[in-house]
Length: 116
Image 1 (cartoon, rainbow, N blue to C red):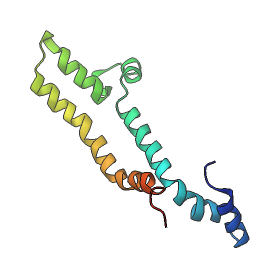
Image 2 (image 1 turned 90 degrees about the horizontal axis):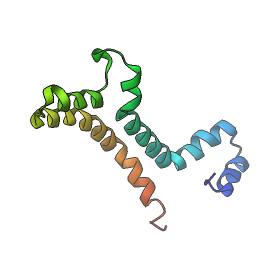
Image 3 (image 1 turned 120 degrees about the vertical axis):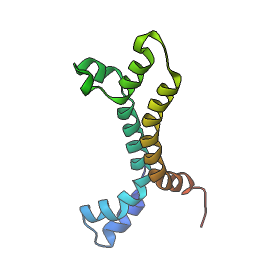
Image 4 (image 1 turned 60 degrees about the horizontal axis):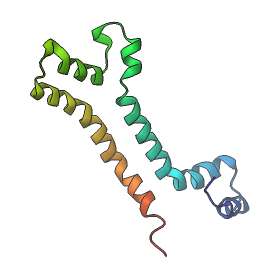
C-alpha cells in the first residue's frame, strides 16, 4: 500500500502486465519490508516455548528452548556452563539468519535517506 501509484501507472504505460509489475517493480521496492517480516517471523517461531511444551509428549520431540529450560532445572542445580552452551545453540542460527538478511534491511532503512 505504500508503493506510489505513479510508479505502478508508469509501469502500465510502459506495457507491463500484472505479474511483470509485481516481480519487476513492487517486489524490489518492498524487499526490505518482506525480509524484515520474515526475520521477525523466523525468530518468533524459533524461540517458541509454550506451544511445543504443550504439544510434545516425549523428550525426543522437544525443541531447543525447552531443552535449555530442562538443563537449568535438572536435579535442582543449575550448571550455568551447560546452560550457556545450550543458549549458544539457540542464538547462533538466528544470528546467522540476521547476518544474511542484514544487507536488505540496511538498504531499506537508508533508501529514503539519500537524495539523488
